[in-house]
Image 1 (cartoon, rainbow, N blue to C red):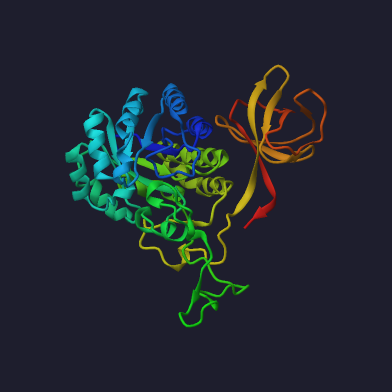
Image 2: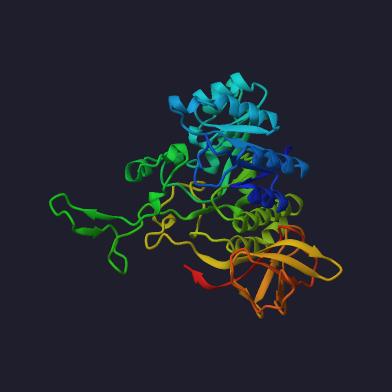
Length: 416
């Protein structure tokens, strides 16, 4: 293993980009307001993208910009100007799926690295070699590949052609995410970034001659239908060695529409797991339960290994609900810390009160627990609770913290 394993994080907005980088990502992928596949994410305007690239580079992290829509004729309007801007701000690569978009990238910014999106159906080494011949520098593996198939690709491509694969996050019911359900049921084009996620909806059967009679596909307790398309979330934190052995060079985390807390939690857990494995394989093996408990502190739908160890079966779906499991709440973000007084300025994200036992989850250093014993508003007046969204409060904390460290606590009303 000659090359460093890259941990690649989602960045749905500027705050999430900064958290991803501070919590251990080697690179982030983000989208502008056009040409990407996550229109529901807040995404980046030009100035935010410029600031994001500058911040990432100042912390030795890379930025990849998504341009992976399946383009229609009208989508090429403004594309060349957009690509020139991406080059001008020194983004590190452009992520594409459509051959037409690829050609415009090569013509407009010929020196930019191009990564081929999973949407392009990269399932074999011949496809990888095809894209490399055209000038691509990285191939994102289709989600439908096993580890054995990925290894077969890695063994048949040059060392300078990089491989990337999803290792954690939501799974799409449709092949490589190319879904038409959203278009048909809600008029929103999944392949242009506007998916309404109908795979998470509840479905029943209706027989043609019995309109209005809804029959559950699999009966649940209330006999109202089932979530037949609802996949568990991918989690490969227990399988770092197998991913590396298969030749995966970039470990990609899904989640540009997830929360800042999700990004920080998942990235730090995978950063620690990857580093432990590289530096001390026995330590990694001994901490597997710990890594899994850490990723479970972010919301999730149960976990699966997807296609990596064979085709998924009925155990990889959740038929009874589309809700997340949420055991911890994200309650605050550190804005400032004064070492002399030991007080931190916190922006509230969920309600907390004096007497709550909380965890300070830090980008650098170990998580520590504390009980909130005193709390003040922004004017220095003592308060007993912080119920207002984004309320600014001051807390006495026993250890040093820094901006973008986060407060979390066991959820008072867990979601299952």
